[in-house]
Length: 56
Image (tube, rainbow, N blue to C red; front, top):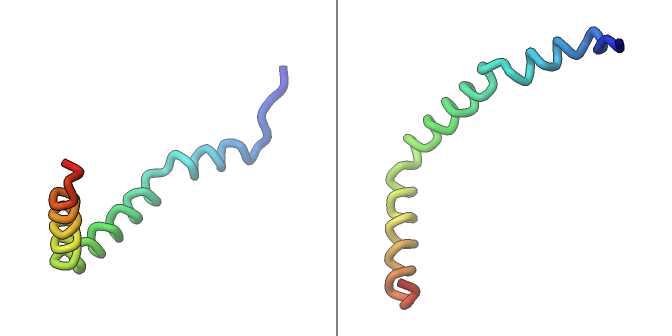
């Protein structure tokens, strides 16, 4: 029976470690909070344009 390489456990640990996704989501949350007014108007404008174009 073949045994996996020694570094396979390290790779698996890095892929399943929650630190990277938590850091990325935290960064996105901060960036979103800083740009919230601009994002709100962009989404509102996009929805208004979609509804006024007759696509609804």
